[in-house]
Length: 116
Image (cartoon, rainbow, N blue to C red; front, side):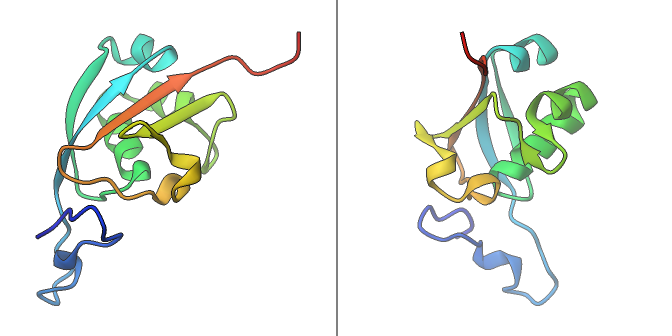
């Protein structure tokens, strides 16, 4: 079954030899600038690239380039952004390539960076 939590890649990606992609539905919780850009605190999204990067791409497609620029600096996550997958900081998992699975909760938080 696609989306098995212990598997980084879904079996259906290559199981039929046609490159079929998995589609998973996750809940995105948006805080700070993400909430301002999207106008909502949480949203259910379906992604066919079941990774944190895939969730960001799907949210950017839904809410526009402002969402993408709030999240990324080039190809990397901005320093003032924290992403949690089921309450675990994704930086301690696999970064932007952290897999997400059916029913996961992905939280996006903006913070303040700098010295006092």
